[in-house]
Length: 593
Image (tube, rainbow, N blue to C red; front, side):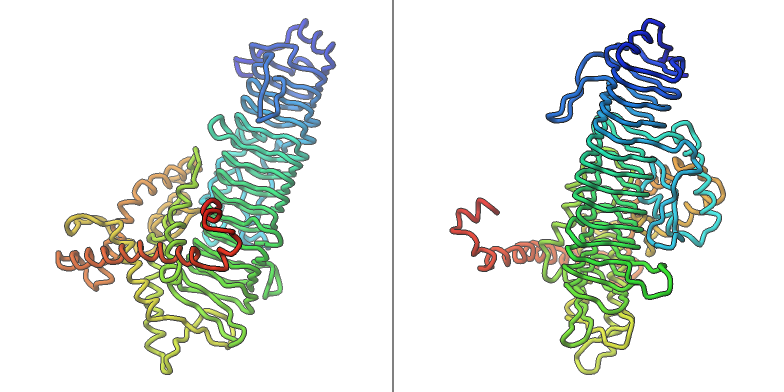
């Protein structure tokens, strides 16, 4: 028993019983001072119950103001922090509740005390072959590493051991509700930990049902959400009838009015329209699923073992449906269509279209750069601007021009050159982007090739810009992996995994410290990579002053192009008569827009 807690006096027990309180064993009920008997009324206490400081006062949540204390509730094996307001909680068992917490009108908050009974989560694949065991403090990168590297048997064993070490602690054996959390008008929380603190509180309200999951700091869950077996990062918003199961949702994401299951979603994902669903998918964040999207559960094998894998910036248009299994490069924009066969879109920043009239798949490389610079620039900035996380456990690369997308563009340039060289009739055909016999046509291949090169110069010079040719130290890594939003050189990731397997990294805390150290080294690695990109474009091992000046001049021209195209792509909306016809005059339009 912690020193701050004491036993109740005989007088206090007598007063509590007169106020309608009961206990199966009053000696198992401990309190902390200052303690006011008047703050408890109509409660039942079972097992070991510890209550923090309670004094006459009020706890506020917007317009709701409740008396501090515990009223008309059942508590079993519970520790409550200081100055809580717990009203009409029909069952609260096996929980540790933080300070200044408000629990109001909750049917059931229960937790399984046995760590071995914690439910496994089955993301990315419906057959359970990528299952992971969530815990409070798990990051999106942790979950992805566990789900992805299934071929490393020793790694899987070590991650499970490390997780049971966390769940086996006194803290891990109980559900947790962090400081300043609000849970009100909620039906069920079963085996759920809610991370919350004074400067980053979480809120759960409005007929919610949650089971076997972790809610990150600063999250809001409201208006009829049902979530089973889940892990939420920080500042995730779930609302309006969402149905969620066996899914990891990254930081700063919003899900509403849809169905999402058996998926891993990296940070900054938006999916909040009716009749859309995402099943058995990996979506690497900064993404948006439009209404009517049916992504998943269209199996082409005899079991439910297919997957969708999409890089950063995945954006399928209205009513898109895909066959499993399919894979998409970063920042693919897909036109509205029922895509009839499995896809492997290798070109980043591409527009993809199923041309039913010509019965052909069409892919335009670098579409964003050529035709929607405003959106491309805005997307690169808005995710960082919207990041309101106080706790930033998951490191995130927000820029759409980064080592991962740069490598995809370099590979895309090789593909385009080969396809263009093979063209005999002026039409450029691609291989290996759709299963089946029909042809894939590359639109504007020559323009896309130049756009990729300009994008690479722009990316590299943004990271290198200085008055003279820079001296860059360090190896230019060519192979990168996205671990929950953090870009890590594959060689560094392999060393991390080897150290977990050997026991050199023997806890999740140690793994997180390694990821943070890699994040601290990332700016220098990105700079070395940028320098290497310019060398590869020029076909040299080292830049001389002449090449540097050439790139500097080209960068200035590209930067002017970017600014002009941002204005031009936005101007298309401003001069569109159909967009403007709903306004009586320019004054109304200006006021609204």
